[in-house]
Length: 253
Image 1 (tube, rainbow, N blue to C red):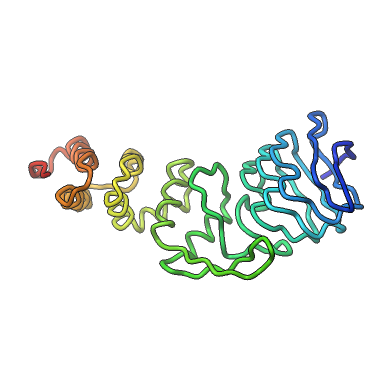
Image 2: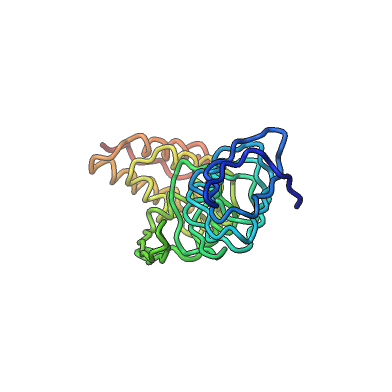
């Protein structure tokens, strides 16, 4: 990776306060006199493709490179990466776009934002392999103090379903297939019509062998005050996909 010198740096006492984007410069080298990169310093620099960060930099702040959607290559050798430094960097392959890092090592904690547009296989693997109900995740906060954060299965279900529905990601698909019963019943219980609809329309998970279980669960949920829309959605899906099955029960309120 090669970089260019740039006039867009605002540096005071070794702290890179702000980088003003220069559209013609896509590959940069942070100057050697920089010791830390402040929060949001490169935020939304959408022309930036690669960055070389010298050994002199010991800290990269929260959201420092967030929203740099063209950024695909970052060379870091010494810096502590604090916070969501690369949040939303959809082209970045070598570093996960989420999570806390210390000395380049990923901590077992992630910042969940269900409106995000970026994640990678490393992030998904950690989430699916290690997050169980009330698992404790050790992480470092912005002051590098050790904290513990509980992650529950409901958070996991929301995350993995969004990942699959957005990009048909293989690890997410495998996890949903394995846990479809619990996942579908969870979304029925919280009246999440759109996610249930998305999982049905994918055609991957709800089969003849389990459709009646989900309908029965939705009927019970409706009887307890839940939204009837999901019950109707499931019944219509059953009639369309499995018309040879026994007639359905009447819809119950």
